[in-house]
Length: 338
Image (tube, rainbow, N blue to C red; front, side):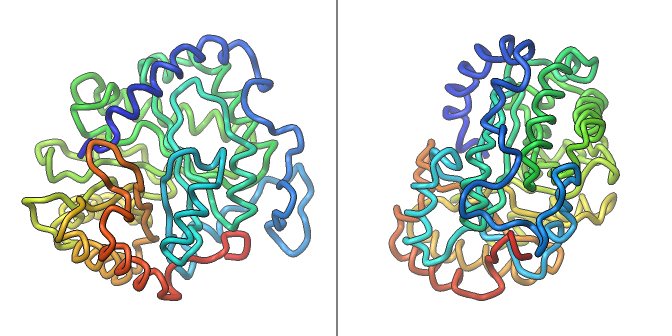
């Protein structure tokens, strides 16, 4: 449920130190986006390179014919070194790279370009550790949001953003102990609207609850911003020991509840399996479950050693199983040519 908690708290301290500066500093601190176009080796997103004043059309990426095969690894996408190592181990190049950014961090435009040059879409998990959601909804972070949106728009490559994930858990600063559903929705809608007003429609917005298994009393619908503000449903859930490790056992209750109020496509935005003898079976269940559901876009494997060793390399037999299943042509594609 909380595999990256310690990792987040260290990063939160750095984000808090930067937040005040970034709110005043404008775009110069928000990433290397001066070029506004893909880096060397990056293909244009259509056969004809579009004018810079036309936002990238993310429509083909919203529900592509094939599945996303994603990963979160240390250092990416600022450096793609660990992504490339992961690709060699698994035999497939990931086409979705997730990273975690604190509220106040700058936009990693150069990293997005690097991922794009390798045929991967970047997914940013944006986490407001030290800024109350009520302040965001009230416009007190507007200078930062507008500058960030302008940087995303100038880069003009597709980016996935999920804001304040795992909101249905009590363990987050923006979780159920500190934030009401109305406050969460207001902050989400305000950020989304600010991006739209900046012309940054090259963003895919992913709403990311934790699976409901550990917090079954919390209903998800009150936290949903609405179909006009969300493109993907991004589920966060892990195969853990001592629980039902079937795909439906892990993700089914959350999926079924969400399907009562939206039909938006789903992505396993963050997942992995505990190391040990059962991991091989968990990997099989993961691939089979994603493959069987046409509305399941794919998954992102959390390949970190945080509170447990979620890295595939920690379980050689499971890694071999992952490699075998990832060879299926239905998983992975070059996002520059969806």
